[in-house]
Amino acid sequence: MTIAILLLSVLAIGGAAFAFLGGDERAAKRVTAIAKPQGGRNQKSQAEAASQKRKNVSAMLKDLEKNQATAKKKDKPTLRRRLEQAGFPNTQPRNFWILCGILSAVMAALCLLTRQPLLVMALGSFGIGLGLPRWILGFLTNRRRKKFTAAFAGAIDVIVRSVRSGLPINEALRIVARESPDPVGSEFNRLVEGLKVGVTLDQGLKKMHESMPTSEVAFFAIVMTIQSKSGGNLSEALGNLAAVLRDRKRLEGKIKAMSSEAKASAMIIGALPPAVMTLVYVTTPAYIALLFTERAGNLMLAACGFWMFIGISVMRKMINFKH
Image 1 (spheres, rainbow, N blue to C red):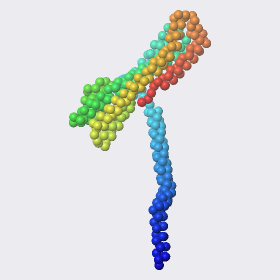
Image 2 (spheres, rainbow, N blue to C red):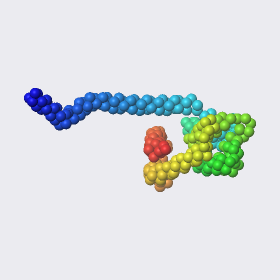
Image 3 (cartoon, rainbow, N blue to C red):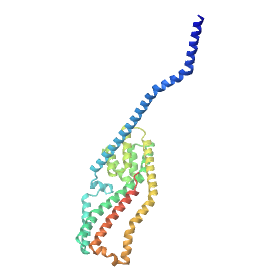
Image 4 (spheres, rainbow, N blue to C red):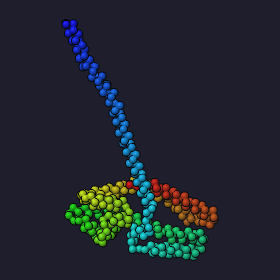
């Protein structure tokens, strides 16, 4: 009996020692061995899911950009739309073509009076009759967009203050149309007049974006459309939009300041060949007259003009930044 009790006591002491001294470590090893593959599989599956999600989002963005590019190519603005964007809503396309014809005829008459070759007369008539009016139209359009963008944030602030004071959105738009300078006032006046005759706000904002196709107007149309459909704090949303537009303008000014040196260098490099050519023509005209009188000289001038155009285009692409 005593021997059995001693044997059981030794076994109990040995089991306790095994449990307290080595059991936890072995148990921990077992748990680690069991949990590690499972955790690795979970982390791997999560990483694969996140990677797949990023790929899906990237693919969606690429498809969206592709669709937008295709839509832009299909929906090129007509001449009437371009005249509206330049600030001539009442000008008919027929009058524009008549002006182009008059300029082309005047250039052809000048070439005939100065006894220029037929090639020079054809190129001059084409460039002055079609190229110059389109360039002027594009210049006026860009200048009008810049003026609109510069004053658009202030117009949104007027809408925000009007809404916070308790005025309805139509009255706020009417105040902007009445108080803002052109072109902001004229665009909002067209929007208000459309709302008076039964045009919905969505349709009016769409026409406003067609007349002034800028990202700022697109942001404004999105905010107004969402707020009109889902409700919410319109003044806060427009206030945030005004802050974003000011930040964009500040960023544009910073980009201009940082790229001003490169632009000045590009202007100097682009102006050097014509300036040197003019100086040589003034000092020794017989030395450079061969470029104008000989056929080989004409070909050299054409090649130089072509390479100058390529160089200026490359420099312009390098110093213009999208933001």
